[in-house]
Amino acid sequence: MAKAATTPELVQAITDHLGQTQNHVSRLEECFEHLNASSRGKRCKGMEGLIEEGRKRSRRKARGVVKDAGLIAAAQRVEHYEISGYGTAKTMASLLGLDDVADLLDETLGEEEEADKLLSQIAMDQVNPQALSVGNGEGWSRRTNLKTRTRARKWKTFSALQSLA
Image (cartoon, rainbow, N blue to C red; front, top):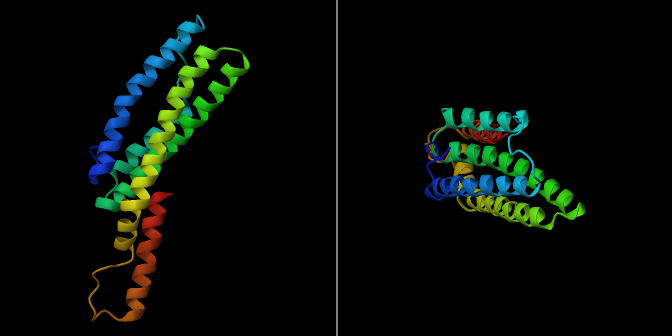
């Protein structure tokens, strides 16, 4: 995803979070050690679907900030899925009195929540306003009649928003 992004802050956020993910894996392995359990698990079809959706979004023909808006939407879907999983696992560990495991999961949960907040900030402060201005037809010639410009703006805005869904 970082290769497909064009906004420098988005590229940095994706790259930084990829580095954090290595720490998440290490913490999960430590959790399994505390539980005397194997860290080898089943493949998660839900996460695989979200990752594939992100890959498709990164290959779309949209350009610049419009593509970045779609990438943020896809990345946040992954973050929300992870937040849900880590939050549930942390709660279960706490209820079972596995405080060491709960603390490890809480650390990762906090990092996932921070990543989500950062993506929201990048989207709200930079990417989405710019993407919507592209979708609203900025730069249209004054000679283009008002009715045509209005239809084009609505269509471009709808298309930009649809690419986020």
